[in-house]
Image (cartoon, rainbow, N blue to C red; front, top):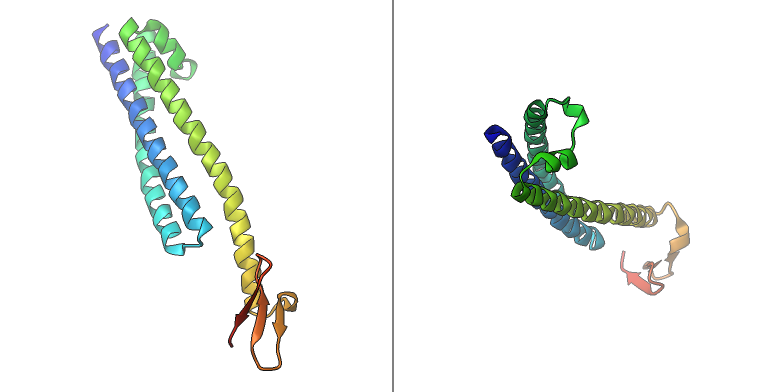
Length: 169
């Protein structure tokens, strides 16, 4: 009926908003990667703050989507846990069915990209943390291996690109 149609068009809007949000979170993850690569703590913190806000927006969209799924499931006379977008596509009119399929595909693609970049970021975060950890240990003198004290009072440090840097102390 008419109520069903308006619920489905609302659902399409929500899927599109979620896709937009995932693409923004993807951009943020890419910014975060750049920040980690250059060890920019400020940028990393800014990214985390922005991410928190985005997660809040996402939760809100998810709640709206669940409320719509509930309303649609009532129209379909099925329990909400048993319906999914594919089933809604089957009962929607052709135009809405196409729009719904397209929205779902776009969201799926955005989610997959986002998850892939985040997996890569976790690897980068781990290696940059171990790099920072190692640097701190060397700078604070816990591992003498990387440091060579010289007679004139300077410390020669071995950095990780294999070249030697001289640091005045």
